[in-house]
Length: 145
Image 1: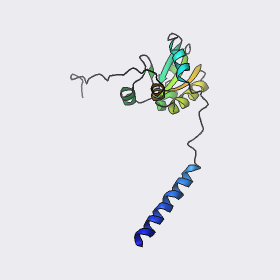
Image 2 (image 1 turned 180 degrees about the vertical axis):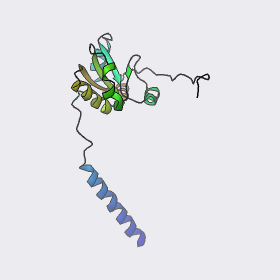
Image 3 (image 1 turned 90 degrees about the vertical axis):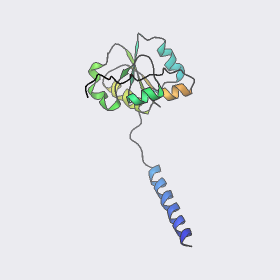
Image 4 (image 1 turned 135 degrees about the horizontal axis):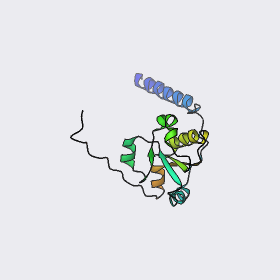
């Protein structure tokens, strides 16, 4: 009987917690367009006109893969690195599933950059796109510790 009461209380607590979390929002949604694979592939045919801003951590890039040429700036560093980004290219913000990329695209758009949209590397690959597997360089045995 005690076991039944405990299980009922546990189930009620879980259900209550899920009901409370269901109404919570994770912040404002991005205004950026999420690029389809076809749109992304079309932009990749003009490499001299675009720049991919990859906002993922380096370990995500090596684990998942990415694209041969990109500028790596993690999302939290982006507002402080805007001066490094050329204004003469159309930008594509990239993350794993386009959530962080959407936030990055919003930051870039507000800063006056021309942004095509946001894309997700894993989403792109799941849709049949081919990623470049990035291999981390081996540690330098001569580096000072």
